[in-house]
Length: 424
Image (tube, rainbow, N blue to C red):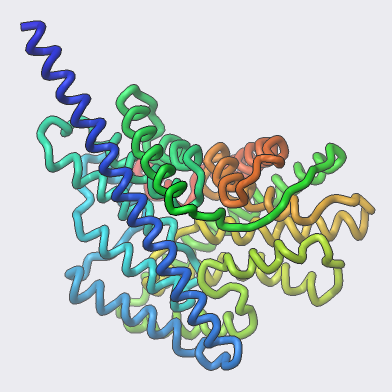
C-alpha cells in the first residue's frame, strides 16, 4: 500500500514538473511573439506619423473599432477585465477560458500598435495565465495545482517580457499567489528556467540599452524624495483609471465610448506624441540624452504635462475598450518623474545627481507604488536595463514608494474590486 501511494505521489510530481516546463515554453513563446509583433506595428505606424500627424486622427479610431468588432463577433461579446480575471480564477475557482489567449494577444497588439496609451504587459499576464489554466484542466492528476500552473505561466511571460527571471518569480508570488509552497516553487522555477533559457538561445537584448557607471551616496536623500513623490503619483494614477473608466461605462452605447475615446486620444497625441502606445520609444530617447539635459521652461512644461496627462490618456484608452493596464504607464511616468526630480535638484540645490540614474530608479518606484510589489519592480527594472549597479537605491526607493502609496490609498487598480467585496 505504501509503495502504491509513493508511486502515485511520484507520478503526480513528475506530471507537475513536465507540465510546468511545457507551460513555461509556451508562455515564453507567446510573450516574445507579442512583444516583437507589437514593437513592429508600433514602430512602423510611428514612422507614418512623423511626416503626417493627421494619421493620429484615424489610428486610435481604427484600433478601438477593430477591437469592438473582434470582441462582438469573434469573442461573443465577452469583455477582457485584465488581471482581475486572474485573481478571480485563483481565488474563486473560476476558470480562464481558452479564448483569453487569442483575445488578449490580438487586442493588446491592436491597442498599443494603433496608439492606445497603455502596454502589452497585462495582455501577456492574462493570456499566459490562461495557458497555465488550460494545462491544469487537461489532467486529473493536476487538479489541485491550478494556482501553481497559472503562476508558472505568468512568471514565464513576465520573464520573457523584461528579461528578468527574478521579476517573473516575484510577480507571481507578490501579485498573483501571495502564498509560498513547495509546489509553487517547483512550478514557477521550472517555467522561468525554460523561459530564461529560451531568451538566452534567442539572444534577446534588454529593453533599454543604458550604461550605469556609478551612483553617489549623497543622492540618497533625493532618491527618498523621488520615492515619496512616486507614491503620491501612483495614487493619482489609480484614482484616474477608476474614475475615468467609471464615467465611460456610464455611456450605454459602445459606439459612443469609441468615438469619445478616439477623439480624446487623438487630440492629446497631437500635442504630446510621446504618449503614443506604450511610450517606450520616448523613454529610450530620453535615456540617451538625460545626462546632457538642462532645465528650461519648455522642457519642464513638457515633462510636467506628460506626468499629469499620461494617467488620463491611459484611463481613456481603457475606458474606450482598449486592452491593457497600469504596468507600462507606471514605468513611463516613473522615468519622466525621475528625470524631472533630477533636473530640479541639480538646478536649484546644486545636487550634482545623475539624471539617468533617477530615470531608472523612478521607473521602479512608480511601478512598485502602483502594483504594491517592491521586489518585483526592483528586479524587473534591473532586468530591462541589464544592470544591477543601482540595486541599493532601487531597494530603498521601491519600499518607500509602496509604503507612501498604501498609507494614502490601501488598494490599487488590480485590487480595488477585491477591497470593495471585503468591505461589503
